[in-house]
Image (cartoon, rainbow, N blue to C red; front, side, top):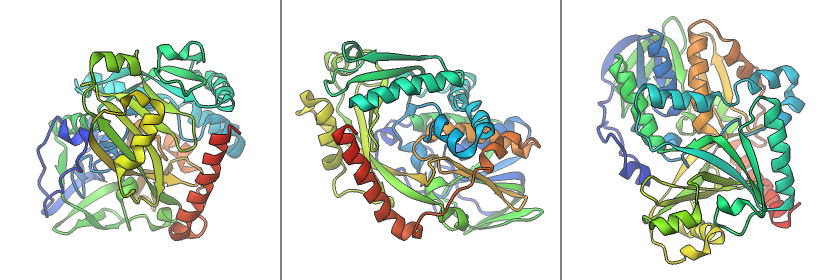
Length: 427
């Protein structure tokens, strides 16, 4: 089979590399077989080949087909559960270990861009916007919490000052992370793939994996070939099915939707986002937005549990955009798309091993851009013989979803409705 084309999106339309790789045919041997051509898989493969491993990467569709090629493009630090929650639930030792890595994914991304001269429209800074007084107090606590873990590049702006950052009246204040940023995620991915291939890495698209048999060597089978490898890395995240059945009972795909406007004038762009930083609000089902390199407003939000799309993506997201920027009522929407990310019950990623030869990392719960790059580094460390940092994540227990995936979808939707109500009432 040939690889599927990428779903139509702003990113696919402006991708730096439109070429497709051939499917796997026949049998290959290597040190490590990586399954999944998104950020986790490509980051792992690149870190490994830099260490001298012989690596084969298999992608079921086309590189970047999943969340890595469809997300909001924001470099957001830390995890989907913040450090105070981690410390309270898992203890001081786990919190120290995860806290020491909370801002590393950001640094890895920037190192990759610099080392390999990746053109992915990197822009500096992102901010969190409070919609209520309660959220504003939460941002103050957030700043103090991150400072405890060594991250001091944060700036609070209250109601009288934040408009120099965001031209919307809906907020009570913002917290700027000067170390954050935003970029074209698909081009970041493709740039790393080219770096991997330049060092001898082998990539096959249109090669869905049928089975993985642990062993010495492990065997990874596709419809038309197989890879024998000392180690296997499973990195399919929300788009992998059947290869990690136990973890599938402990995670759930969720869909988020994005629209992108026509190019805006300089005056329009400056009025919306004067400093060109990315924004996400503090609601439970948050909105997020930023300007692209060609001055379109890229706006996303909402979550559909189970991965189902609304009948109209533009119909679901445009009202959110107009709540924030009513002056854009006449703007044309040029792109609308959705994509799945993998949600865990505790909102922390799932790292682990199956027997001794199969490793996995997934379930970033909305913080995949940075955390997936960290995962690739930790996976490479573990496969090279030092699993201490990998094990800090692997030691976190993950409970099964109540009722399994089938019944967890309506339960999650009910819980989300409750938190949406809290956001609206300012509780």
